View 1 (cartoon, helix red, strand yellow):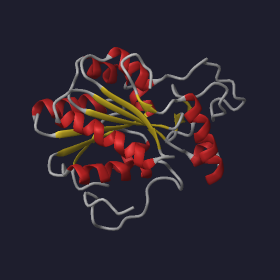
View 2 (view 1 turned 120 degrees about the vertical axis):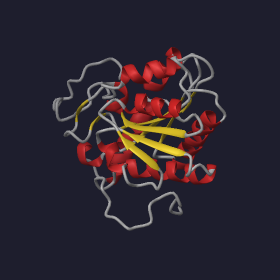
View 3 (view 1 turned 30 degrees about the vertical axis):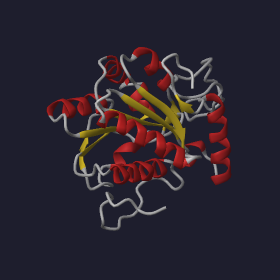
Length: 240
């Protein structure tokens, strides 16, 4: 895959852990920005957490926010400059824990922004603790015996689909199929560009460092995630 032209030109060492899925998501986003021709209009809003490591990837206007405030900052930028194409980029903690209120109310108000959330089932940057997306009986650093006993993790796209108003675009993709993930990202951004309101894409991702897996084990675990988190575009009734 070619390097997106919206990437900054200087060579830099990778900032993510080896094998991290964020790099795949970000490359798909970069290609989407190129293919849609929105580099000059794009504003990239990023959260604290692993997502903050993307603060200087793109040659686009970028703002780093306080944890969980990425979506409302994106909304403020869009309201201040409606011609901009604003993309909020968060982890599952920033979207579904500290940032859940802002995410839901932005969808409820039908704010014309795009949110991309990377879901790797745990809090990665702080050491791999259980998160709202942790699956039942999943082993994490804070549940070493697999005693995370929620019947179901928080299903972000399905929740947003039922809370939000108007013509939403909501989808869940995976780094196991980057081209489909890019298709969803492009459709979400196009939804915003056409003034149709709130759009949201969740990207299932791998975290070898905190999962303590090799490449094969990481994608085997991702396959388990895909059985819990159904892939596809999400309808207003939460079905895909």
